[in-house]
Amino acid sequence: MIRFARNLPAQLVLTLSAALGALALGQGTACGQGGLPPLSTLAPLDSSTGLYGPTGVEPLPETAPPSAGPAPGQDYFDLDGYLAEHAGPTTPCDGWCWQILPNGLIYKPYLADLKESRLGTQFFNLEGQGSVWDTNLGGRMGILRYGTVDGPWPQGWQIDLEGSGQVRLDTQEDRDLQAADFRAGSYLSYGYGPSRWKFGYYHISSHLGDEFLLANPDYDRINWVRDTFVLGYSYYWTDNLRLYSEVGWAFYSDFAEPWEFRFGAEYAPARATGFRGAPFAAIHGHLMQEHDFGGNLTVQAGWAWRGDRTSHLFRTGLHYYNGTSNQYSFYDQFEQQIGAGVWYDF
Image (cartoon, rainbow, N blue to C red):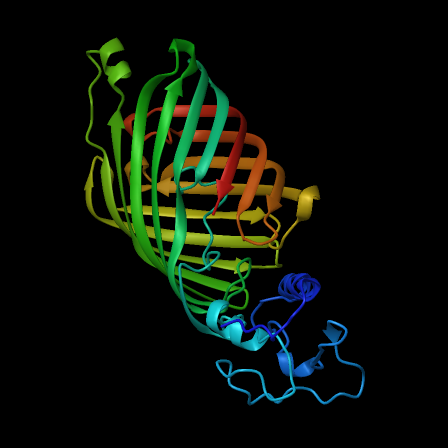
């Protein structure tokens, strides 16, 4: 509760408002840092001048209850009481703690994996078809963490959810929808030091677009689907360089076979980049049992920005893909993609 001294002049109200704003903006709230300084560190207000008292005046006792009125002979604004009532805690934790909807991911998505859930789009030339537009509408986010509060480089345990719709549009035919894959999953991840582990489940199913079926009424539609358990491990050789591998086993599938393997390497900024950004490069391989453990290879390179207050990563650059189609309605067709794209990871 805010208490004003009796006969406080209007100039003092403006002075105190400015002081409160400066204090609130000038103090950090990161884990392990203090918030605003207690009022007891300031000298009492001199009612004759409208300013804080002269040097040598005894500070207010810290034990004064926020709800109590001014002590006899003392006029002051109860800053401690106001903050206790309105601001809440300023330090989430010091070390490891429980966090709901934490900032950042302990096990980050593979940058060049086109089947990860993210916001992204790439334009490319597809041999034999011309210009094609693939778009990924989704994302992955943390739900619960027991660990540190460092967004770009968190440590601890975390539960994540992901979901996305991955669509292909034919730019030669008024952007008709050719196909769409839908993916959803949940993961438990653990990270400490340079090592990161992931275990979880994802579902993915593929569907042909209405316009494609109308234009190709004799096309043999398939019910491609996987329900898969995955175990992944990644190691940060440096803060910016990651190596990873992942194995997946489908306990239910149609057209797809049970086993798959992912692996790769990527270089990207791990900490905030500011406006200048930093280069990135990524290479990703995906082997599948239904292709006799052949599959596809993706290479991407360009420029990236990581947020100052979040761990979100924005990238733009060149895109190359070679192998069986990343749209699983066409899983047995070979594709070579050369183009460029934009990608955003939460």
